[in-house]
Image (cartoon, rainbow, N blue to C red):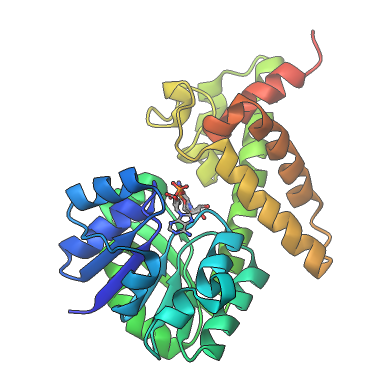
Length: 301
Ligand code: NAD
């Protein structure tokens, strides 16, 4: 069975590595935090002495790290002593972290220049999706490398889309999450406006969820308690998808908008709103809790 190095055993990485081990892959995990290594080991993931040691014996190297700078630093290492140097020629590098499109392309170029293969494969579905093996993967890179990674991706995910060449998995992720940030704010504004006009939450939900206002931010992540009992609004806005992560993803959208010159005014507005939200306790609350900020910021009546 394929040997997989799994680097980054945090909220997402640990359950993903556990699912690979359960599916029969030979997994070698590593994280900088010893407690996380121990927790992964206890859950069935053998731990290597270092990230480089894990990569040296792997056919696939998966990284699930906080940001692009971590991925690039680990690939290159100080004085070229990183994972790219440690791995055997032709190793498939699969980065599942959410990073900028240009960073993903740089990572892929570095890997290819070092004689390896590379895919960007960011995910959506959160910790619950990681635990249940139902993540959605958006993959960028060569079709032959996608085919080679598919078996491993299927052990961790439910929906796997090859989006095109290097960086285009990250492009799909940033575009999707820009839609999500904008629509979650739009739905929240509509509920607060409805409140001011005397419209009940349930009545607005019943109309909009069956009309042209229908979207995930309304029908799954409804920002008011009641209409969708499983939405975070019914549980004091416990995430779900934390405001800090939405702010991070919209920060990446902002970078890509600046790079391309697109007139994405709503995307930039959502980025500013979520940066403010995540500067306070919204960082640890579900991103749908932005409705409370909108209510508080609305003029007193
Ligand atoms: P996390 O901070 O819990 O995990 C990242 C781990 O990487 C940490 O445990 C850290 O110690 C480890 N790490 C950092 N540098 C390392 C290095 N050089 N060597 C070994 N380990 C190193 O983050 P997370 O929530 O698991 O998210 C990981 C990625 O997935 C992020 O890019 C995030 O944006 C993305 N993501 C997260 C979610 C979510 O719901 N948490 C959903 C979708 C995508």
